[in-house]
Length: 210
Length: 208
Image (cartoon, rainbow over all chains, first blue to last red; front, side, top):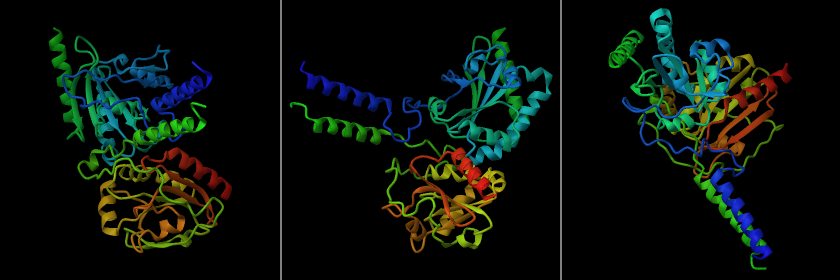
């Protein structure tokens, strides 16, 4: 192989690398490596892979049962509870803004019931939101449950780009661990009724295990 | 030479072009609020105009009708408030519908920096009324229509695109009427809020 041909091949390979890595020197597109899932999450399906940044706040880690976690990231399956409720939201979403007080109320109902507070956990994931934007949402609505940023829409793509707000209830213990038990797009009619639905799901799970 | 420099440059150029063509826009307007009511124009040329102003220039003055029924003039804020102009390309499109609703919940950050926000688009008042009505109850900032003469204000700033819409652009004007920050953003993506807030804080500090 002559020298010129070799140089050409090196440059051509570099060009291809830039093409497929999405590193073109312009504003990076959000999560170019993730192909959006064709379907949105539904009951009976497995929760798609989700990686969340381990909170630095000790009380948040304690709520999630991650007190000893040394890793920078964790998966929802590591959260200690029977049932995990995930709210997919965006601080830019008017619907999520309107729904925030009701979600807070749901969280308080869970926390105020000693039998439930350890069995059901609630987290929120801000799709297309930076940590700063998630922080604004948390501060604006006095949200006490843990919120995570999905700035580059990686999780949002795994979830088939669901509209917001979107709620996913996942079994987090037992044989059905990681299985989606319920999904809900938009608002829930009342926090009390929604909580009853979640309690029923736990009971059904427990029966299944016996 | 069998593989001249021109062919190498050509390869890089083609690669860059293809990369840009496949760059996905921001996945915005994810809110259930806008279900079925958003027109998606697809990926657009990121910037399609030639800016006529720069940081340090006096901001071109304007008077425009607002959705509130008022007529808003830029000069009215001179000596009183820092002004953020948020130009958005068009109502009922994905990214725009996912930008101003976020500003609705950060009124306190604007107030803290003694700033006000003016939202501007080239849509007419009825369209803007209907669109912003979907964004919640507390639209605390004025929404202005640069519809007629069509895009005159956008044109004066050099941000009117070739198809008659305007750029997605943030301009911060200090209390003396001097432009202190310009972000003519990729039309396909939402400008990060933290960048704007950081700029506001810097400008506000200098004004004190």
